[in-house]
Length: 128
Image 1 (tube, helix red, strand yellow):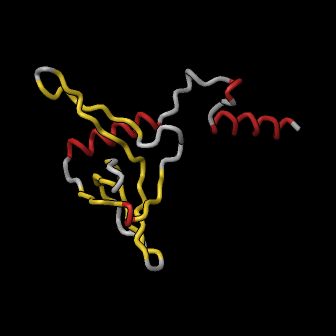
Image 2 (cartoon, one colour):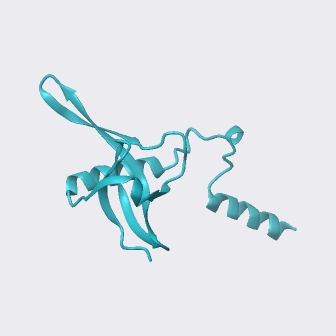
């Protein structure tokens, strides 16, 4: 059974810390965490103090956005109700999820949007 999603900071036993949208799932005798779009957040400091935050994906070599984590690998987890932090997270995720069509080309495999392709296929079908 999967519980309702919530935002949380997760501290792993390895020392890593991520912020993500999380859902807990019971499977047999163990609890798993379904972690969506985990990010790492680092403070950017200047001489005057904290200037802001640097947000990066947790795993940089994958395009996957959902991960299953054993609860036994988690040291602690804290649910987040911080509206500012949730807004940072959602803003980052929305920017990452938007494909930048100006950089994609036919060599990379980009042939068009689903709507454009659908129209082209309909034209071909009607012509034959």
